Amino acid sequence: MDTLLHICLGALGLTVLLGLVRLAKGPTVVDRMLAFDLIAVSGVGVMAIVSVLRETAAYFELILVYSLLGFLGTVALTRFLQRNLERRTRERPAGEGGARG
Image (cartoon, rainbow, N blue to C red):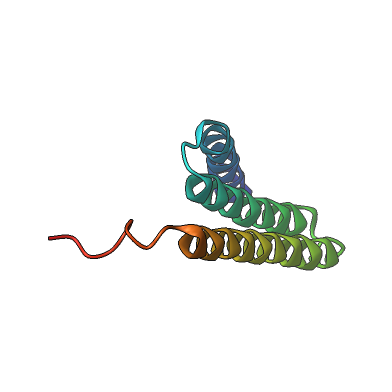
C-alpha cells in the first residue's frame, strides 16, 4: 500500500512541476489560471497522501484552507478578467467588432 501511495505522490509531484512550467510559459492569462488550479489541486492531493502515510488527521485543516485559497484565487482572477473584458467592450468604438460577413 505504501508503494502505491509513493507512486501517487511522485505522479502528483510531476503534475505540480508541469503546472509550474505552464504557469511560467503562459502564453495567455487563462493558461496561467488553469495551471494555478492544477497546482492547487495537486497540492491538496499531496497533502492528503502525506496525511495518510503519516497516519494523522493533522493535515486536514491545512487541506481545507489550501483548497479554499485556491478556489478564491480562481474566482478573484475570473472576476478581474470579466471586468476587463466588459470595460474593453464598452470602450470599443461603434464601428469595430460587430458581425462578420
